[in-house]
Length: 495
Image 1 (tube, rainbow, N blue to C red):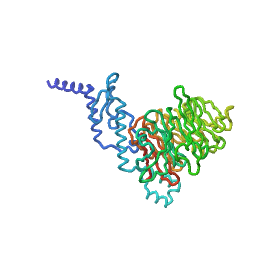
Image 2 (cartoon, rainbow, N blue to C red):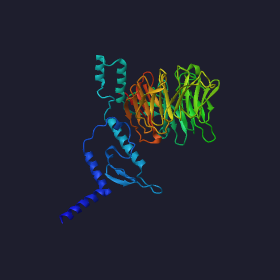
Image 3 (cartoon, one colour):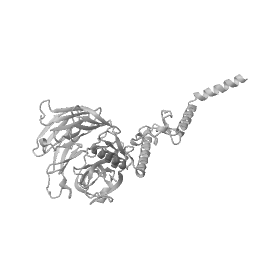
Image 4 (cartoon, rainbow, N blue to C red):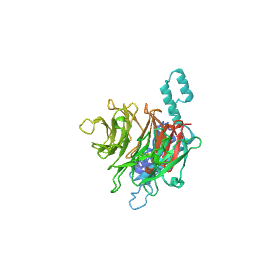
């Protein structure tokens, strides 16, 4: 009798272990017991990039069931319906967006509540003491001082005034671009009726504590997509804006040279010239760049599909260079007569402007990424080049050895055209990811200094556009970061 009872108890325990629902409940109990234990600090990694999985770190031990989603708050599984003809609010995409939004709100609260320090153990008093003792030279002291100020930047909303206040409430910022002296900000806004319009914001009135600016608009707008924008120096420094417009239906693409004098009071004092308004028909233009090199004076370049087109604005002379891929990013060197190009194939090559388009010697340098290159930036000594691609890789290349010497981790990109902002004076690199997070790295050791969440919920239509400068508003301006997202403009200024 005792033997039969022992066998029945053994059989019950065995069936209890073989039942998948019992195993599931045991795993939940084990995960609850693990969650009750104190968690270790994960450092910056937990706060510097949003979650990309359907679960969280606390539920990593819970087994994944096909067609089910485990809710860590309710500690139970929910069924994911196919969602063909029925309305299914519970999908993996909606779950991921919910997690990203909760994390964004948490980071915004943390930024408002406390200041983050980029490097542990460094504050103003300790850096000054180490500098006095000779442990820090002037260069390192300046770099660490900039990092400390970056960690203390506070977000404030900028009040924008305009002749048409109703347009400010409906038009959305697409991109912003500061000029060389950082006293003007060129803007491209998506209008509600469709298309885009342009404006220039005067930053000279950007003073704390009341941050107020005025937007000068014009009557020119386009119903075509703006692929690329850069400031052009034709009559004087930053006298024009070069826009690269995509073709629409039977209308071909074009590169438009728009005078800044069309915007009221936007040109420098003492210079009152009508400027030059011209447009060049260019099919399928992806990128553009203006040359400040004396050997390519009054010239601009456009990156086309499998071709680079160099155009002289004054004479109208053109040179064409054939490529094997679409050219998505361009920049002219200042001292050397070189034009650097980033392609969809991942290739980065330089065009020697002295050789012309005849022969095989016009390619001066070749670098390779594993994905489409979206931005190239040449450093001041023109011995290094920064490049980013659609795989989220940001690399610093040595042009003398054609080798990658440094890589900046954390950038997020899958398919978007996202620019890089290099500021050697402050020793930082700024980039906005497709996840709508703005990241700031140390240019010298690739350390991620700060991750700024977007004031708006993350979406493909609301990726922020930023502009950083050590002199916002001109020579007497204060350092800071401008962020345009939605209908709003924010300023992250040094405290």
